[in-house]
Length: 185
Image 1 (cartoon, rainbow, N blue to C red):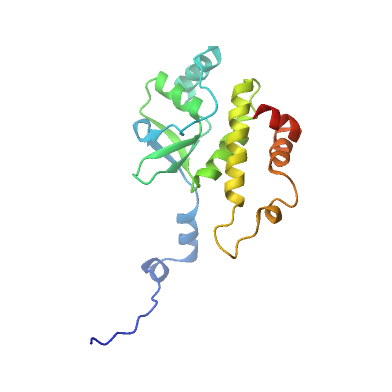
Image 2: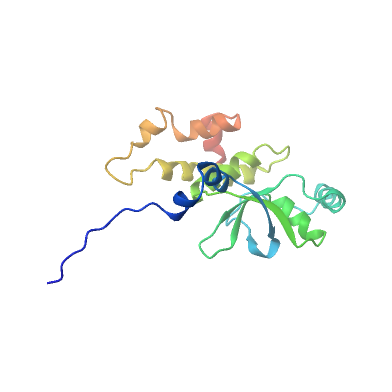
């Protein structure tokens, strides 16, 4: 029988040859210019991207001064990117035939991305009832999945939500009652 050799936990090369400041800088989010061809729309995005006067105005603005607010994307397993925030900006960039768009690459789970999408888009002036319904439902499901126990040391859902019902939390964030959230869904 072969003799087992002891294993050693050695520090990574980064820890040996860089300073803490350099490691912190590398960990910070950065704005990258990402080709539009590498950015996929978020699946089941609950908000419509309409070709209306507002979209044309955005496209005209982007053509003159560029994208002022970077989009937010998350990296997919296949190396491509998934758009979390900025679907209208991406469409406006496509209209003016830009090749790339400034984006912040953020490490997000699917559920974190859903919650971010809903929270960012509920600020819009005009939201269709169907968009609200789909977005509230997506956010509720994401929040419930985040609260589920995945092991024996996880905090139960009731503890994580501090005694509040999920629909109540979604409603508070949107400025609506839990009953109104339920009606939409």
